[in-house]
Amino acid sequence: MKKTKNSADHNNRKNSIIIIKPIKKVESLTEESLRTMYILQSTLDINILIELFDHELKKMVSHDYLNYKNSVENINIDSGEIIKEKLIFNLKINNNSLGKFVIARNIKFNKWEINQIKNLMSVLVQPINNALLYRQAITNASIDPVTKLNNRTLFNKIINQEIDFAHRYEQKLLLMMIDLDNFKKINDNFGHNIGDVLLNLLGQELTKFMRRSDLVFRYGGDEFCIILRNSILDGAKKLANRVRNNIDENEFNCNDVKIKISVSIGLAKLHDDDDSITFIERADKLLYDAKNAGRNNVIAEK
Image (tube, rainbow, N blue to C red; front, side, top):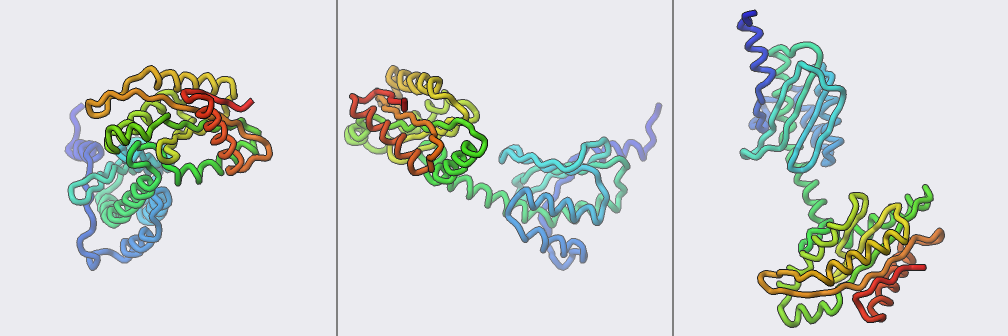
């Protein structure tokens, strides 16, 4: 069956991606768009921002589905159920993509509605950019720059949450403390830059052994820690020994400097009366028991 010109135009429109850039002149905004602009500037939380935009858009153009996706930032926010009549928008600022929006419903969008959505999208560009920059800043503040692992600041926040959750739902929780043996000699012999490369390689090595539910941190200096959720002590002790053996048998290439290193590990389980202080102190003591026992050792709580 031969397609009519209108149906062909509609299919092209439906499958094409509409590029949206930030509004240039505030004076050109309608009263509705101006009100929406002020509302969207009220938050830096990306989820709340999308929710506010969805709410404001529904006042102007009815729709049954909205999706915002930013693959670079691993963001995928859905509202409603996807259906066939959809519009796709790519938000850009300074030629950088801020992600894609899909808006859909059961009936076709007419030209006036598409223009209304485009106008409102142009108001959204700058708030989206601000929210993404804020999100990146928060993430960067929680990441150790040397190892690219979670840092001590984030550990201090998460450990309390994990302890509360384990107590409330009677879940097992283990804490593994790991310290490099004689790391000071590495820095003294090869310099701190080589020491940093080694720390980075050690961080990568630790993550290879962990489940998705386990959380790995650089605790400070040459010390790492791992929060093991809902794990039994015997299994975690075997894991700790696999980590220790692998590192002991490995030779790390640090900018063409070959380095052998070992680690000492302490492994503590959460007690019913533990808070973060007592839990960490016990894991730390077990770590130093392992070092005092001759290093390259795992000491687990009985």
